[in-house]
Image 1: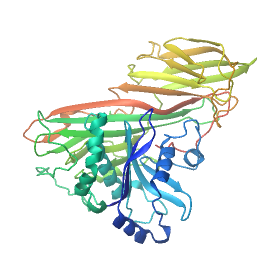
Image 2 (image 1 turned 90 degrees about the vertical axis):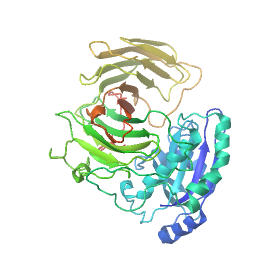
Image 3 (image 1 turned 90 degrees about the horizontal axis):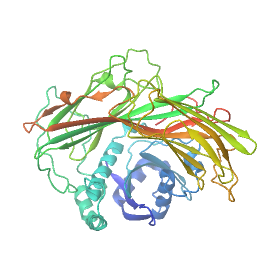
Image 4 (image 1 turned 45 degrees about the vertical axis):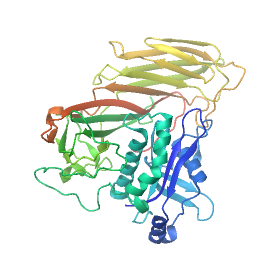
Length: 491
């Protein structure tokens, strides 16, 4: 695996967006040109790459909520592998540009793909994608530290060290501290991990009691219409991240995911290259195929030899019968006012204990908000007339009945126009929910800390956690038109 180019971008709030560091590898670019032949796309200038990346990630043109190349229905964004359209001579798509963001930094690289890119090969089949992300994660840890928020001087000093660091960890564009090509070994009994080479970006070995931290996060998306002619959609995407802090040699570890007796089998499972063996039946369940109910339903065992940095052990999707929060949203025009009616109901299977829960009701393509006469049955309502936005803070619990309502009227008689959106015209409007529920998952999947096996004499402390969070969770006005997606939602 090799890298054609690498960029580190700063986009801290209140400051100009800029490229802090860039590096191109001419020998790798020459190989890319030979491998691609007539489909070769040259890497454009840094300023062009910067603008394309910021647009694709939604970090530029904050006043433009719709960008055709990014938001068109025909464009499927498959984060973290971006597809950048390059104009000019030899115009075409630059793919796959890998990007990860944390805090004030975005790290991006363009790995060398040694197979034809048309038609697009599945990301899971490209080892260079996994290894490129591993390189970016390592550089991110080096620059930001374990806390993720370094001081300005610390970041500047580490950026100054980066050229010499890359000479050691990525000579001529080929990272040294990533898994080698070839199939993983499949030992029946985990053996000692052996000595691992300490990467140059790692500032030092862990000192203190050994800790293995495993975090399970499920993300739920939903499109609810409140209309029998339109099918509501929702999906669940789960990730398991691991961090092993052990003094000396890192041990082999086995993590087991379990489901409740009536749980739906996990699907579309992808694993990190460090997984040493895997039951092939785990990988066969796909959300694209019609399930016959005979899919493998666990337990799901993942033996692995962990890398030195935090990493994503696996990801999956799950089919659940209902979304966690069911909503009804009705907006009607009455005498230059909008009458708003909202009902949100928490499903009985969901734990009634939130870290946060908010409902945002934006109103586009109207004058600025005037009089807002709205009542809520629970929580607090904040009004931002400048943004034509209602923020309904539901707090950490729904009432005992698990149902909340909002009723009222809103006038738009301000002196200046409010925000615009090309989609939300007339009665096309939505509610967007933001919530996080600790210590639960929608699929019921969990990691029992007593089932985690660590083959080490150090007896590390095992820390497990799980949470459910929302992403792109929309409830559309049932009395207006709304965009309708056909088929399964893509994460």
